[in-house]
Image 1 (tube, rainbow, N blue to C red):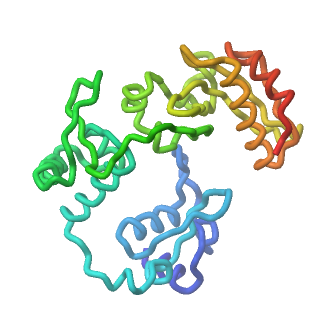
Image 2 (tube, helix red, strand yellow):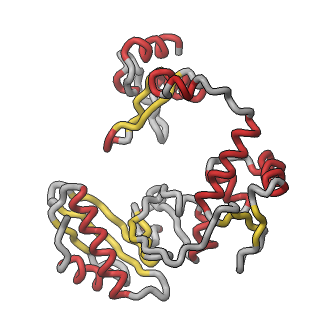
Length: 277
């Protein structure tokens, strides 16, 4: 680790693959080399920090003082409890209404250890207890939260989008049961390999299994399923527009919809009439 730290100091910013001798990749799911493990430990310890690099999503490591501005580094460090309170308040602002478990999950805080902090925030009026219809547990809200008059969202969501990453909350809010099936054997998959939920307005109305076929210049929709009660024509038209935007962003020339899923026929017709871009 000392050698890796010195390498970062001398040559950073750099990725694990840019170390002079990162070592062989381990035969594990993530396949981290010795060099990568050393970088991650130094990152965890605060000796170095990292940025993401472009479309390959690689972590680029450098000395903390070369990434975080000096004025920020010079500020006094908050206590662990103060830091956790701020993380809980940030989560409350982002989530709107949330259970204790929701608030903790947002920044991966331990629920039992955070329980007394949430109680203190409630006592101080920085979180407000509320009742959410249909929920079987108490809920909390940030005092600055407000209910918008309407929601005009339209987005394909990554499996790791903060709107859906806590699957129990997604099901509780939207009635949308969502599982990532990339590790599920093909014969047992329900919706597909890499399925993205589709948000339209304030509802999750559909899901699509997507693949970029760069050789053919096509964004493949390998399956398309609508949610109960959705407006098929409206969903197909809006989803086709979002897929055309994604295809243009990826530098692909067309969207091709396979025939799997109840929404596939309407989506194929809508996609054929929607220009890429």
